[in-house]
Length: 430
Image (cartoon, rainbow, N blue to C red; front, side, top):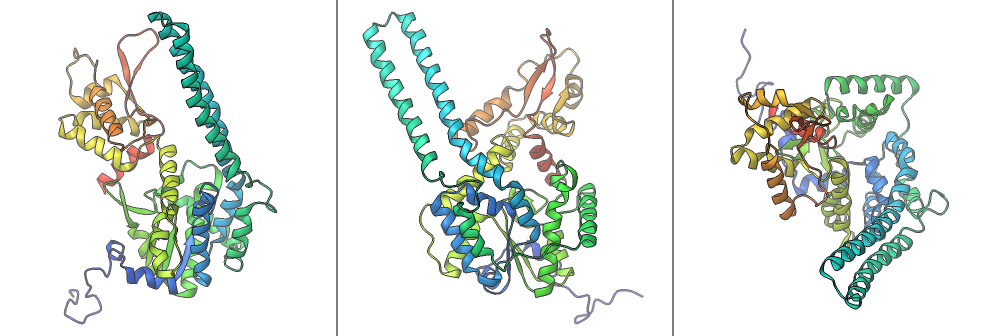
């Protein structure tokens, strides 16, 4: 007997019935979840409070406080917060020290370069002294600013929880709003399920497969606790996270367009409502007019700065959008084979042998590989000039030589870029 497809039958569906993850949230959707749903921040949202300026930190905490009982923090989020808190504080405090030290080294090198040039052109000593004083003055001013900022806004943030201003604000904000830990048996089952998902590439959490021990199951533990609370409340969920990986987000050409469809379907199947997701920056922008709190100028920009730094640190200065543009430009100019080699090298843990390059590019055996990376480097420089990647962005493709050899042994992709290249390849296959 065939399926009943007559109007009114149970199996008649609409455009979004099974594809809710693709529907763009409206202001009404966000109003509903912010005023009557469940809002769960990820651990990175709480940890980034140590990286924000005091103003941005205050505004984000104000937003969380305005949620009242809609704010709910999974127990696993606090597990990860306390596990990583002191390391985050150390990173934030050491950044200024390292920058000042690096600046001192640059100053010494600049004076040395000036001296070498002065000797070559027989510059009079008086003129050299004038230029050296000018140069040293600029570096001293920059170093003083770095030190003053480091000793100013961040000087009171220490591992001591009794004096930490972040803890002083977080403790009342989260009072009575943290979920209970899973029981021993449920926790063990959840860890096993999380590890199974990592192996099968089922979201969320499979992008953390390189983490040691049970760490790879951390995202699933957060997700499982959200599922249980949403089912208990029978409500929509807004998950706020600075994690931009594809095991949480549905990606389109490198852009995060919303939660993974699998997550949306799982939440609904477990008895919850609709799943929405926002970065901390977008959360502030969306929540301010709905919850009616004052969002000061500069706070959003500072949170965006931290999100950008996280991307630069993680992938060597490259974002999925910038890398996608590099690939598109290479293909447009007739260098699709360079893209193919980069992708192959990423699949092979960062290295493509010369032999494999000849096969991928269908080159004759007597063809030299000299200049093979030149188009990649040229377009990379263009992206730097356009401000789409920072000056510090790592090279995408570099030539490798055996010791004492003049002929290329192969080409390598920077280890920081390997996961991002593979992520783009997975998106292209889906």
